[in-house]
Image (cartoon, rainbow, N blue to C red; front, side, top):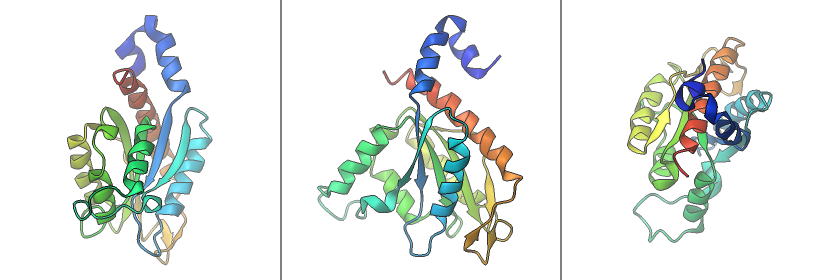
Length: 200
């Protein structure tokens, strides 16, 4: 029996199906630096996700919103409102997180802090990369997501700068990652569907 059937029961199958049909998942690029490789990783995840046909997936690039550093302005920049509106329109997330000094990038932490209610009661998966697969960044990110009431899923694809990138720049993922991407998206969609029912 699937997680959703256990949670809702067969008599509520129609409600679950309706939630699944309109699911919107944002693939959030967690870096804004020059020469970043997160767009390559994000497009790869989106390609694999689109092949599933089970939700609407879109790339959400925090660089597009030109967010200031939190607390350094009066907060009236249009990008702040646009960022919150975008997050509010989504049912779940996949974070493309790279490791910087054993943690996530400053730009991703800043973007996370610029929203509150828009994160609540949603699900997220993490795809990380770095010299150790970005594992330490992902663990830090999980703690932040917990504070924002985002349910992060267990399956966690980790990409190596040495094995999945040529010269640290050209993304060429090993085929073995496909199973983890599939498992992660399965969990994100199940939890996003379930959590959507409590946000009504």
